[in-house]
Image (cartoon, rainbow, N blue to C red; front, top):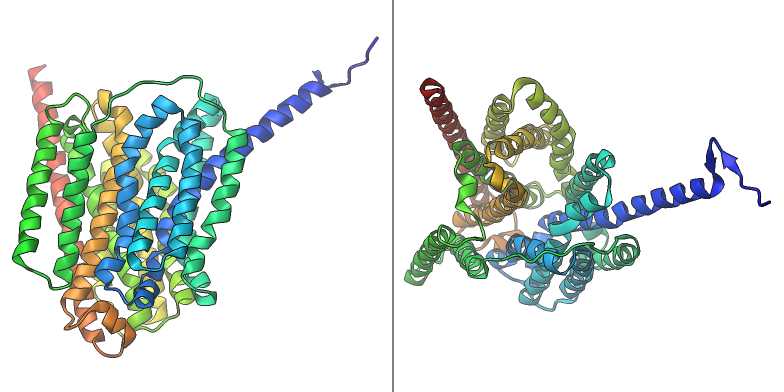
Length: 492
C-alpha cells in the first residue's frame, strides 16, 4: 500500500499545491504591479529632464513640454477605449501587449534624433501605458477571491505611489550620472521582463463581452483638448495672432459639439449623467484644479531649483521627492479621518491647506533657504494627501448607482486633464514675462531670473486663487444639495 505523508491533516501533495498557488498569485500580482509602477514612474521622471532635453535639441520649451503633454494625452484618450477593447478581446492580451508597446515607445524616445520624434515616441509610450492601466485592476479582481482582493488592489495603489515617488529622484540621479537618454533606456529591459512574467502568470479570460464605444465623441474630445493646450502653449511664447484666436474658437466649438453629442448618443465617451449630482460636479472641479495646481508646481519647480538656485539635477530630484512622499504618507491617514469626521470636513481642510501651499510657494525668491524649501514641498504633499482620498469618496458616494462603474475611469480622465492643463499653464506663465524664451534663459540663467520669478509668483497666485474658488464652489454645491435634501424631507 502506497504511503502518503500528512502534515496537520493535509497531505504533502496538498501543501505543495497550496504553496504553488500562493507563489502563482504573488507572481501574477508582481506582473501587474510592474505596469502600474512603470507607467507612473515614466510620467514623473521626465519633468526633471525638460531643461536638459530642451537644451539638447535647442527647441522651445513650449514644444519640449509636449513630451509630458503627449504622454498624458495619449493615456487619457486611450484609457476608456482600451477598457472596451479588453472586454471584447481579452484583458490579458491587451495588458501584455501594453508592455511591448510601452517598451517600443521608450526605445524610440531614447533613439530620437529630433524633438518631434521624441514626442511621437512618448505618445506611443502613453498608448502602451493606457493598455496597462485600463485593465490592471480588472485582472486582479478576476484572479483574487473576495477576502484577498482588497489587499491586492491596495498593493497596486502602492505601486502607483512608488512610481510617482521615485520618478523625479531617480531621474535626477540618472541625468547627473549619464544623460536624459538613460531615462528611457532603463524602461526597455524592465518592460520586456514584465511581459515575460505576465505571459506566464496572468490567466486567460473566461468571458468576453461585446460593447459599444463612442469613437466620434472621443475624437471631438481629443481635438478640443489638444487645440486648447496648443493655444495655451503658443500664448506663452508670445504668439497671440489671429490664427491662434481662430484655433481657440474652433476648440470651443468642437468642445460644444462633443457636449451636444454626449447628450444624444446611448454610450457617450463621457456620460453627462455622471455629473447629475452637484456634489459630484464640485468633486470633479476640485479634482481637476488640485491636480492642475500640483502638476504645475512639479513642472515649474525644477526650473526654479536648477535655473534660479543653481541646484544639480540630482539634488533637485531629491528635493521634489518630498511631495509624493508626504502624499503617500498622509493619503491613508486622510481616509481614516474622513471615516471618523466625514469626508466633507476633510475636503475643506485639504482645500484650505492646498490654497495656503500655493500662496506660500508664490513667495519663493532667489534667497529662499533649503530648510524652507523642504517644509514647503512637504506641506504641498501633505495638502494633496489630505484632500484626495475624501474627495474621491464624495464622488463615489454621490454618483448615481447606474454610473458607479464608470466613475473610476472618469476620475482618471479628470486627473489627467488637470495634469495636462497644469503643465501648459506653468510654462505659459514662466515664459510670458521674459523678453526672450525660457530655454534661452536656461543657457544663461543669471540674466532674466527676476523676470522668470515674476512669472513664477503670478503662476502660484493664480493657482491659489483657483483653489479658493474651488472651495467656494464646493461650499455652494454642498449648501444647495443639503437644501434640496431638506425640501425632499419636508415633502415626505
